[in-house]
Figure 1: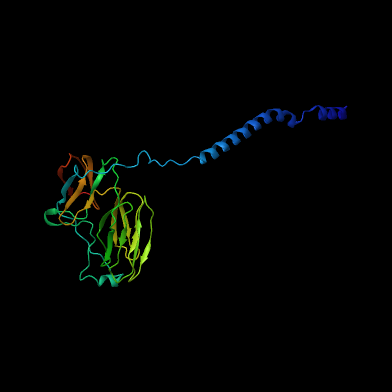
Figure 2: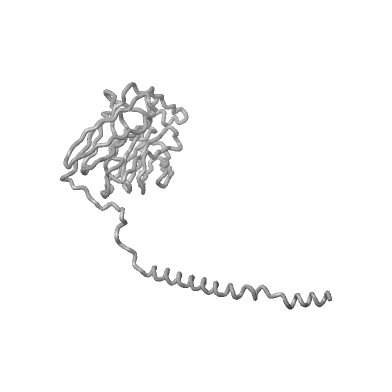
Length: 281
């Protein structure tokens, strides 16, 4: 009886393949058909020519010089500047001997009547759909007296950044961007300039020297030409600006940024000023 039941179970139990085959087969056929259809569509799309039209948001407008204006102004510091601390160059005697007295780090540099130097002033927003070409002349960053000169430098996207070394000392140029590609190159004594460029706008890119840790500069990379960096006069000028309403920003290494809004009518000049407080951080 036991053998009969076992044999009956073996012959009566349906094969798993008998249960699955009728259900799986139609699904498999549909899946294969979909794959073939998708492959044919992909091949067909590859045969279509790529569009040569500009992207919908690509800048296309050009500035009309007949309607352009200028924004001028000054940047000042209200109050006494912080005490400047000398840079100790004893670890690099080749740098120390280039100075009759220890230099100071140029974090806050003032001129007459509180005029503030090394302030980057630029159009932050409002330009819309204008297109601008990068200048053919390079923006030059020098190394003199084991210091970067200038301390703050503005340039445009795709414009050549040329780093020179007028010291008879080896330096190491190390920009540290976040939106662009970082690089780190040695510049030996007697070596030629280092040329580079940036693909994307980016503000306040630090430039270091791995051999002399007190060396620092800041690069401001723009997609437009409306920027300036103040000297000890504190003055700035944004020229050939088309009519519009703009946010103008001023950046200072220690005191941060300030924004102002200005509306420029056709062929109009406007003036504005920024004042930083000596006690702010």
